Length: 94
Image 1 (cartoon, rainbow, N blue to C red):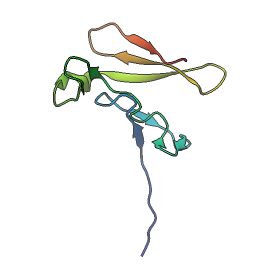
Image 2: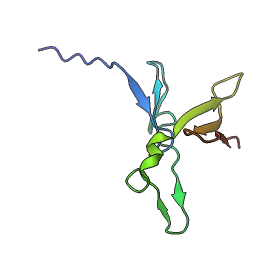
Image 3: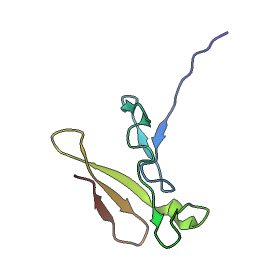
Image 4: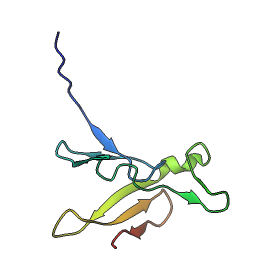
């Protein structure tokens, strides 16, 4: 019996409910899982709940791009884009 597993593609979802990003085989794994996977979510302060695609179907159209520091792999921001809308970058630097 061959127990070999082969992964054809691997995705992370930095912002819960938005589109994923394909990552390479060398992607960092932390003690919590794949780096930057589901680290953020959209929160509705009115009802104190996170927003899902079940609530807002159009979230599936929002793409995510990780903005990294030029000199290293430090995350500096998250770029969110959707069809027919201007992109925004959320600053992640401390």
